[in-house]
Length: 322
Image 1 (cartoon, one colour):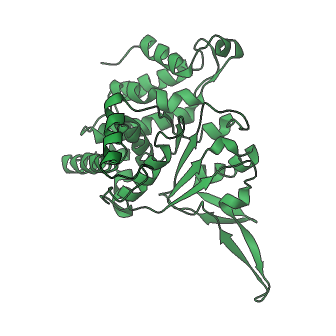
Image 2 (tube, helix red, strand yellow):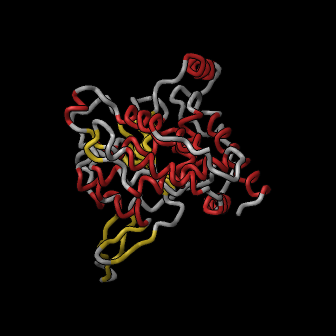
């Protein structure tokens, strides 16, 4: 069980991070909350949206607000696995081999335009994302429990890209769609630039550091103590299973997806100041957690059916526990 002071501590820290990053990342609070929820639930995030909408800025802002190290890798067709993980190099003078660490050895890794790199390079992240370690020449190297991947991709420009395979997509706890800001938010961005803010919107100096690694470690440990009623678990399982037989679906959400949804719901509950998970948590997070894991049939794709619509239909058909 988790006590009230811990709930208040969690929700307070969560809101402080959102508010801090929100000073620079205008109009994307919902997307920011989903990304932070995945991080505190121990998952990784795929941000999808057109260029210039703040995807990379979101990751950099969270890193700054949380006092974490970050590295950014621009994925390109010529990028190799060793460019990400590192490689063993021979030092001629010493006559020994030394492992030269790659950018994956950080706390927040920004994989920019991940679908620009071929499958072999994308696969280099599989072990890192699942096990939080990498193996080079038979030797394992730990990345640490704070390791968090924020990958981005542009859904509009598909020429010269390599779609992520199902196994890679399943490693992302959430796929967060980042669209254009609302009119008020976009006007606020223009006012900020007019008043002297950098037009690139990449000035992170305005984001205060409101947490540190030790704080995040404590926050990540709290959700596991949150109680979840059996009726809620049954509802979550029914939603996950229903995606496998829903209209237009070739492959539904895996058991791993259900576990990810449960973890995310626990974080959302704590962030809302509650010591219990509700069906509304499941409904709010089902699309970002489950939709990218569905593989639709070719016919349904030709009909224009979207995975988010499938999830919505499933949620409307499953009885909600009281």
